[in-house]
Amino acid sequence: LFVVFSSAAATLGSPGQANYAAANAYCDALMRHRRTQGQAGLSVGWGLWEASKDTRDSDTAEEQNGTSTPDTPGPAGMTGTLSEVDVSRMARIGVKAMTTAHGLALLDAAHRNGRPHLVAADLNPRVLAGKPAAALPPLLRAFAGGRGAARPTAATAARQNIDWAGKLSALTAEDQHRTLLDLVRTHAAAVLGHAGTDAVRADAPFQDLGFDSLTAVELRNRLSAATGLRLPATFIFRHPTPSAIAEELRTQLCPAGADPSAPLFGELDKLETVIVGHAHDADARGRLVSRLQSLLWRLDDTASAAGDTGGDAAESDDHDLESASDDELFELIDRELPS
Picture 1 (tube, rainbow, N blue to C red):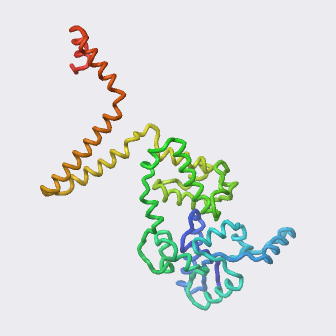
Picture 2 (picture 1 turned 180 degrees about the horizontal axis):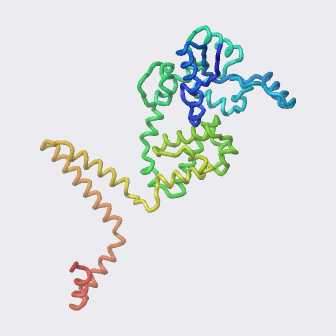
């Protein structure tokens, strides 16, 4: 036998672990190459192994005695550093931890199978079935009920339909920050597996909250999907607290000096495109003209109501014109009219 212990990350992908996935993919390819040369070769892409109390006690004793064991897919290897948060995060994406007996049985099954590379992981089809297809690696979509093409859930559609720039433009700067802070804390709590946002303090550093590189990438992905912004992979570490993240999102969604009426003109641009891009019969054109005229009248009425306080100023200007001398009128004309 010539067996290498690879990782399922090489086949399924793993956010924030591109180098790790690539290294394991090399192991998988090497075993395939050996087999084509007539040599022995088997690569097992392991999923998560369960950490048992006995193993943890054994690891602790070995560390105290200055001894160590070779890397294994179990908790004595690199997955031994996974926290409860990490395990919970993987469970939420449908990956369950295997017992030692289950893992060894899969190793025997991989040997009997005869192929150069197999993935040995304990997946939860029920959890996978609850995920939108777009959120799953292509190879796992069959486990999600065979839905194939991505079909957004109601929650996903709601996020995609939120016009954050328009929503925030109607708020004060303080309310904008509060709204986005709620968004950040909600997603941060979900990534960490908290039932509510109370455990996510606005001014606490993400590392103190329990974030690492993987969970930081997951939070970035969630915020990017929720807001429609393209956020860099280092976004969370560049802005180390939820409050700082909320402020940066506010800066991008509500740039300084932005015209508060910009969303309104954006909607008018869409309306103009629809009107110009479609042919209208005489009846539809007449109704459209009447509707637009009605809107214009309402706009004039609103402007008149809002300009009542400016009436005195207008009357004052009229009075000044009536009492102005000829020389003052000519000076006004020269100043106001283009030469």
